[in-house]
Length: 284
Image 1: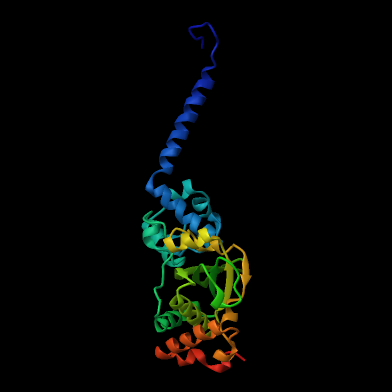
Image 2 (image 1 turned 30 degrees about the vertical axis):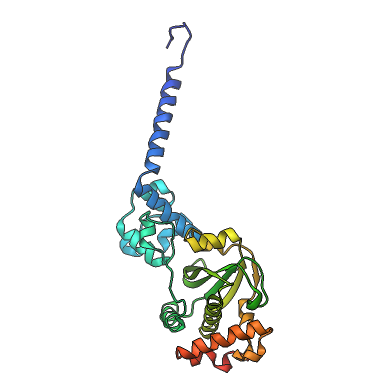
């Protein structure tokens, strides 16, 4: 092909360039489509929870199972995504169904147990029946390391973790918020946290402390922290179980402020009929 200036132009190159531009345009347009974004969100959620896209079929129930090739990429998965896949993913990872429908920024459910220790106790009883002998934990995310709850400041976040399956002997977990953005300068929040730790100990849930940034705790408070497993990869720095005094005795607290907080925690637990949480044989 010769242009008006008499120069030879490669027609094949022009066609290739136009086809590449058209393909890129179609790809960008498709990535904006809700179905594509839902597929991307679902695959990303499982990957954050430790399941690579090509291994996703190993978890799927037979009625909706796809092949590894069909889940290996967002493009492939979007062509096979069904409502049943979204429903299953929501239940399997304990994710908000509306989040998978691209509504809102909060992927995880929040269990509202503030000042309601009995409600938490009953909920953990139900989760224990589902979890069975699998791993369980309570994570406390703070902005710094504090040896005593009486001197802690800033925000904190509490998360419940529950094992639900394995892939190649690797445990998989799902997560719930027990607190999105509580404050140490508000005593009822700290009393609530101590109660959560005592109840968690009753259910043999391992407490794990993490240090995250102030921006991250603020994001949790606003419901924009994102997927929990990513936050739990941050630095681990302290032992929340040390905040629950030995034998649940107020006298075993380190400071006057700690003693005052724990005494109020005991009163709240006992007032809610949770004497069994404070059984001495649980803490030798």
